[in-house]
Image (cartoon, rainbow, N blue to C red; front, side, top):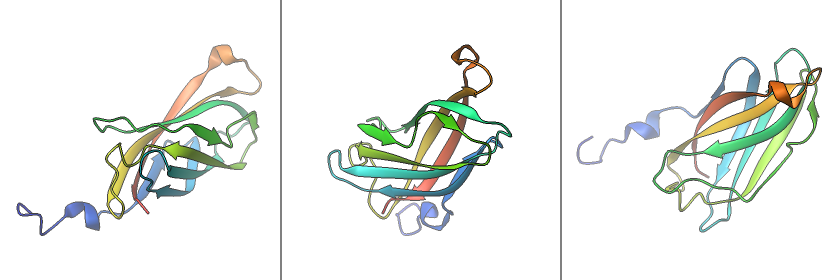
Length: 134
């Protein structure tokens, strides 16, 4: 391992984990030089009630932060047991240290409030994705 012959990250499994409120059904990370990368997430509402989504953001722990210019699929009410596709485009995967074919880890924050309530009662659920960059 010291000489780089064995790379433990190659044998660790891909994963997408959230707390029980959000189910992560699928995910994909595509490499892009500059700001051409994409990150796609398929999430399921497991809150047990409809919620109103405010934002879904992604961050990485690299010295150059991961940033994306746009996200689609994040608007309005998210019904009970509904599945949404969240697509982040224009991501700086290359500058954030993601390497094609290697594993990358980033955090996902879902900011929401119960639909029966108001934005005053906003909450955040966090998750983590560890995936091979395609």
